[in-house]
Image (cartoon, rainbow, N blue to C red; front, top):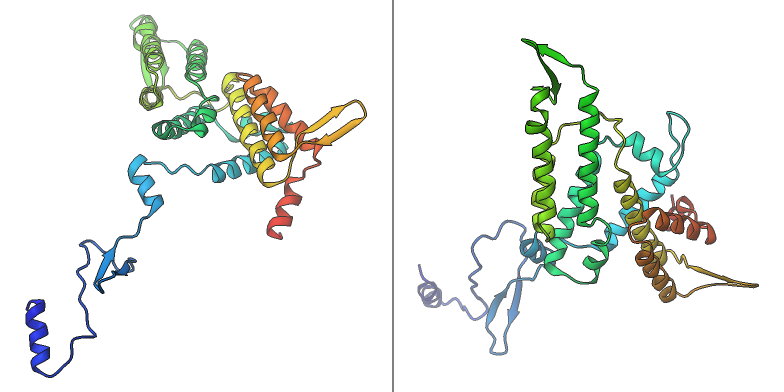
Length: 313
């Protein structure tokens, strides 16, 4: 029965329809969905879809850029590593934590996640992308991959050599490879995939090339030393975003020490100092890491105490 027919039937039964209205909702609404109703100037009732900014961002780019949450996670993780004491040998800090808690492959998983985020941010551009891309650059990624190739050759060189009909072979990644075929079947394809990463520019294509590289990697033992370049870059990026969070939300400030005069900079001045250090220490993450530790010490900042002040536990 159509709307006009329903209205006529009710009116014929002496039932007033002036207080009733009908509304055609869009298809696909699920139970619990929220809608907005708008009464226009002429008294008509219409449906207005609500703009969901987060949903819009996900649909548009596949990535929601929330730098505040990212900074908070990085800061918490960084302090966890700074306070770490190894159960193995009593060594402390960042390097001991990374050695004890992450296998060799972790650096590639982490790097791929970073490149994925950069690829999504690249589409929107902006200052945040320009800053974040200054850490895991294409050159850094290539150096980490080249470090893997060197570690792979060392690993293969230490494998037990077996023989089949007089021909020597080694077992690598569950596959038997004749020693005479190692260059052709193992090393040359790895070099080709590194060159593929080198040949592309946007993070979208770097991600594709890096993902392919990782898919073909031989899994090296857990204790294989991680790339120094990766650790240094990890330190630098972690230090930068930790400091950014400390400065903006925990009143940590850079300190000016000139002769007898000692004073804390303002928020704006401290952020400017941090940016200067990020640029000055580009490619030297350990220096930015040391700068972070000095600022924590200068401000007598205690992470656990601060969290207790905020959350009461």
